[in-house]
Image (cartoon, rainbow, N blue to C red):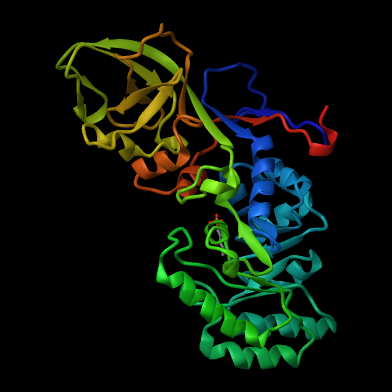
Amino acid sequence: MVIRTVILTNNLSPSFPVDELSPILTIDLMALSHNYSALQNKSGKAKLATVVKADAYGLGIENIVPVLMDAGCESFFVATACEADALRNLSPDNDIYIMNGLTCDGTFLADKNLAPCLASGEEVAQWITLCNARNTNLPAAIHIDTGFNRLGICPDDWSFIADQIKASNFIPKLIMSHLACSEHKEHPKNRAQVETFEAARQLFPDVTASLANSGGIFLGTDFHYDLIRAGIALYGSVDFDTADAGLKNVISLHVPILQLRDVKQGETVGYGCDFIAQRDSKIAVLGIGYADGIFRHLGDLNDKPATATVALEGQIMPLIGRVSMDLTTIDVTDFTGSLEKGMMVELIGETIKLADVAQRANSISYEILTRLGTRYKRYYKQYHKTSERP
Ligand SMILES: *Cc1c(COP(=O)(O)O)cnc(C)c1O
């Protein structure tokens, strides 16, 4: 694979021949590859596995995963068995872990060499039964709860389960747990979870261990263990400090101006008449809305300090009025250049950081990405495998 430049219109009508003015979601695969390497460097001796659940955080596994494989990624994590099955088609030989646990017939997973993260005594018992029936070891992780209280085997069950495993054909491929507060460096929960994880590992001393997600990489080597599960940080702009890692921005979202209008002082814009022009204004109407994952309440922030903004040729402009399903309005009165229909406005990118958009929407980067929707043209920016660059 040398270059991957894929331009997809939405999947509603793949044969639609017209080049319509529509939002363009650009995914910079070179930056993605760079970020994988930068995070691997930051992870020291631990191997960097990647989390590509929810279709690689909404960005498309079929384009994201080959780049990660080229960059050296050998293990992948997804949430569901169905996601794992789809990923197996792209990645015949790599380790694929299912973080939601044993949620379907184990024989299907075993036949496809997919590894569930067993999250209870019951799931471990089912896996042991399968291993014993086939008289072999089958790949699976054991998911330990270290205080998250979401999925994972509780401390009271550890030693009983460890004994059962020792007496069976099943040899866990991985012991894993998940951090609740990794994006807050100073939170005492981080240290407490390491100590609990240490206690669990005593029972499985030779098994590969994994605790850290993206945030965990930046908590220091105590948190790294053997395998890191990185997701959000691959895309550069995150909600926590990654200062010294040199991550690059991967995602940008540009939206065309569909119409420009003059609005007189005192007139209102949009649903609910939420925006009232305080002066004679120039308004641009953008072809994007909450159906495309632009959070509706970004528009509710009018007149409050955290007004959402966009960038037009590098100039910052406020988003005004309510975001509707397919349209959003911005105030371009102060724009200094010439304006015309079709100009592209940056909603996410180098100027308008994903993490800032998330904060303004009272959300997190993860939620913004996974809600972006299907109506974009997706442009997977040129990618050359390092060794094959022209
Ligand atoms: C989503 C998830 C990750 C990846 O988290 P990031 O913060 O995106 O790096 C890792 N482990 C588990 C269990 C997860 O659910």
